[in-house]
Length: 375
Ligand SMILES: [Zn+2]
Picture 1 (cartoon, helix red, strand yellow):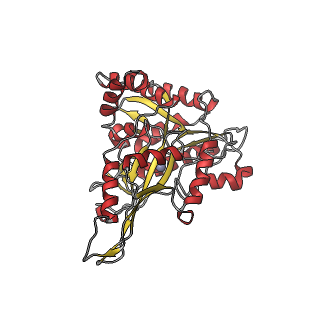
Picture 2 (cartoon, rainbow, N blue to C red):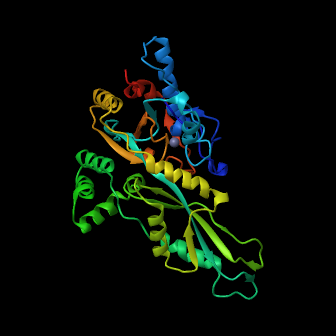
Picture 3 (cartoon, rainbow, N blue to C red):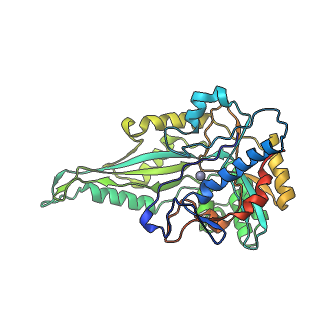
């Protein structure tokens, strides 16, 4: 199964210099939300299926092209699809977005990473309590100030690196393909037993937001909810936080860790209430605990390794990043790859919204797409 996602995240339209959904082609680039993530992949996967048909390639079994409608977080995602329609899917392998074909500024490909496991997306809610009262007579226990203090503590906190077998191999590949001193930092992160050296490596490597995220549970503040009118101090203030957790992280341990950071008995940390996604979270966590890493020993991974070597003579490494394709525990081996080459800086701007627009060069896909199709 080839399963690119067709949806994109929303936009803050006023911050875009072009229509984010027009797909404007200018100077050899496509401008728009989702140009890299993941319209490019849809184009490549669709072209691959069309070519199989055009050339009447004999197939031992079906190839499914699934342009899924819900990349992450929503109700009708691939885990829903697999749960409700697995008898129609029943695929042995799936290819999807994730991993990178990372090139250097001179255009030479440095390494290819293929995600063989997913981090989980977990939302926890921080709720600060105080006295609900009139704003003309404020008390010291203002819930909004209390929440602000809690968030400030979280903003200064960072989780420790937790490497899986895949991410260990990923950073060792970076060590082999980097110049000193970064090669030493990558090596120390993966191998050193000295906490001071690991900390130094973490500090240096984490200047890159993507590499910072791959090695740890990340914490993102995404909403604030408090207050309802100008002359009332609310009795509570709420901030949902979105965590992306390394496989094996237990939700209860995460809650305990964040509570310890906040260290305020008037601030609760817990899953969202059932009517606001709590039930979905429970289901999601159950599913995640059942999914194992897809083994690099499979034929598909090895074919990608071989093709990458013949196309770019660059090393291939497994890695683990954000959740993409949640199939059932008895489902397919899932490998996540990028079907066009990207520079490090371009890889880190996915989902960002800045004064400039996201853009993706069109032409290389045509030349390089065959690297990810097994023949
Ligand atoms: Zn995506």
